[in-house]
Image (tube, rainbow, N blue to C red; front, side, top):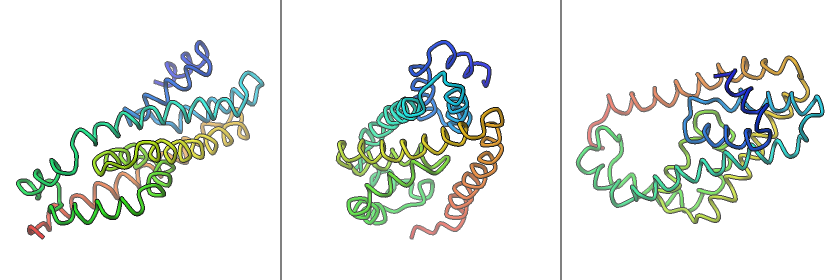
Length: 198
């Protein structure tokens, strides 16, 4: 994968960065912490402008997030509540809890989206509840773009400063992503095992 990413960035430049980050947003197995530090390293050599690298990365990520937002819109809160009424054990949510989550997202959805876009693993999946709970699309795009710009800036800056040692970013963030994924899966499994139709 690394060779493919390197080749695409070499050949397509900013468009390649945006395309890879779009794929990263749609298919989580492609890690942004491998792509953007590499682009930052390339910027440190003078080949790319750091600000344009950040813009390309944030643009690709935001477009990818919009795809997941529309997946959530297709599901919708009514379908989700109907599914919870029949299969609440698998969702680990009741229709009443979904109502509460809907209200919470109405009040705090914007900052939740922005913060989540800076957290590995979670950054991909926050778009789905934003769509399910019909967050205003313009607000969703704005706060997603802000979060993506922050995330891209951090990764590009690290690659720019570390230069040829930019892979240290990957070595640092891989265990962080593993911890986040473990917490997410562990929380779900705990709720599923202790589920009593609450």
